[in-house]
Image 1 (cartoon, helix red, strand yellow):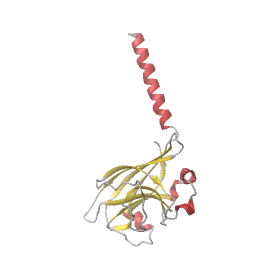
Image 2 (cartoon, rainbow, N blue to C red):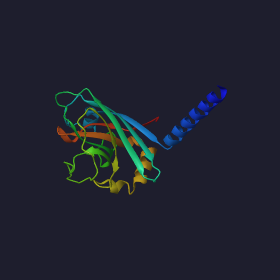
Image 3 (cartoon, helix red, strand yellow):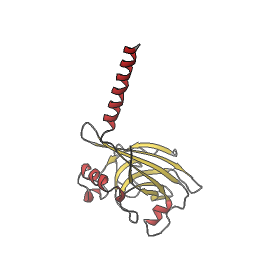
Length: 187
């Protein structure tokens, strides 16, 4: 019996160590996206008046092949009659009072309505109120003027996450409906 308990304890410790090693190097961020934050960043001009909000979690990690991976997990709550299905979700560069270029793309139409750009491999946004998407880093849309590489973007994100925001777009306003500035959180 003692040998069995010892073996079980050793197995549990190995599983815990493996899980901890796998999450090592992961960086997590969070925000609450609202229409008020979208309005503030656009000179007070209301975009789509909505009570919808989104609780957002962003996880960033470096894979074994040295690529950076991005995972967006969100849940939209308080939808109203003005709430339209999400047509795009991105991480953009910009502080709380400015709008900026999208840098990481999670889901969306291709071509993107505002710019007409094609993003091969980008999934269409699921029309549910929750979603999990893996992102594609892109140097299109002006992002290349800010960050020459994915690693340069991640370095800046880790150093100063508050200069980036998550933005959700809908047919109500393709420029953005709800947004929230990123902040570091525990994984």
